[in-house]
Every structure is written in structure tokens, then in C-alpha cells.
Length: 202
Ligand SMILES: Nc1nc2c(c(=O)[nH]1)N[C@H]1C(S)=C(S)[C@@H](COP(=O)(O)O)O[C@H]1N2
Ligand SMILES: [Mo]
Image (cartoon, rainbow, N blue to C red):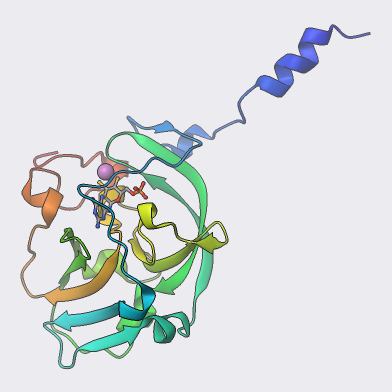
């Protein structure tokens, strides 16, 4: 008969994490921390819209119902916060930025994501196209909680999580790259966790 402690130990052991999935300096969490620079806005979906404007020939805007009617995708990705937690295998549903930009004609190479509450973050268009970014409204099969950015947030999983703007209301396309809230405060302009681009100069 095997010693009882063996089975107990096996059950308590943490699930294996493939170290190749965890960027340098990060540790894996199982909970979902909340990081917000200010209070959580609670915009009712009846008053919500998503706008694409700035350096575009014609601005576009979707109501909540129009946004939900767009083709959506459900996908599973890992996310990495600059405060060093990573969360693996998070599942989201939303609309890819490629879909949102389909009918947009622009010379711009950058955009500023802007939000209820005033937060902004800047991204190169090439970091949000080709299936690399989404505007998500569901997390793990449920409507996104407001503390995590509901009704809808940007999700750019290949960059540090501050680029994934919560309470997203618009993408303003820009000719020049314009630092957003954390980028202007000394965080890295691009924020690639695989190159540990945490702060300006990294
Ligand atoms: N609008 C808005 N979006 C935001 C933030 C914020 O303060 N306001 N914080 C950013 C930061 S620094 C991180 S790490 C993630 C945190 O998302 P979470 O609270 O869902 O974990 O949201 C990002 N998006
Ligand atoms: Mo963050």
C-alpha cells in the first residue's frame, strides 16, 4: 500500500507551467488582479459607443448592439502585467481590430486608445492588426466585469497589459506616435514583455 502522504502531495502539487510561456521577471498567478489608475466608470450600454476617428477619411461609430452584431472570435491567450504577474490561458470573446478597421482608409501608422475615465494608451497600427488585438466584451464566457474593463476593453496580449485599455470608447488614429497615460509617465513606449520593455530606455 503506498504511503498516504504521496497521494496527498501529488494533489497539492501546482499544475506544471511551461517556463517558455513566462517572460523573464514574471511570475504566474491564478487569480485576476485589478489594476486601475482611477475609479471604475459604469457607462450603461445604452450610452456606450465605440468610435474610430482621427486621421481617417471618414469616422466610424458603433452602438453597443451594432458592436455585438460584428463578427466575433473566442480565443485563449496569456497576459503579462508590468507589475510582474502573468496569467496563462485566459479566454475572451470580442471583435478583432482588423474587423473594426476593415472599412477605414488612413495614412496613420499609430493610434491612441481612449476610455471612459480619461485613460489613454498609444499603439503602432502594426501591433493591433493581423490578428494581434481585439475589443473584447466577454471573459471566460461571461460579460466582462466592470472592474476588468466592461462593457468592453482593448486586448493586446503580446504587449504588457497596460496597453489593454479598459472601458474602451475609441481608437483615434494618429500620424505621429503620441505617448499615452503610462507612456508619458516613463513606461516603455511599446512594452514588449518578451524584451522586458518595462520603462523608457529598456
Ligand atoms: N482605462 C484604463 N485601462 C487600463 C488601466 C487603467 O487604469 N485605466 N490600467 C492598465 C493596467 S496598468 C493594467 S495592468 C491592466 C489591468 O487590467 P485588469 O484590472 O483587468 O487586471 O489594465 C490596463 N488598462
Ligand atoms: Mo499595469
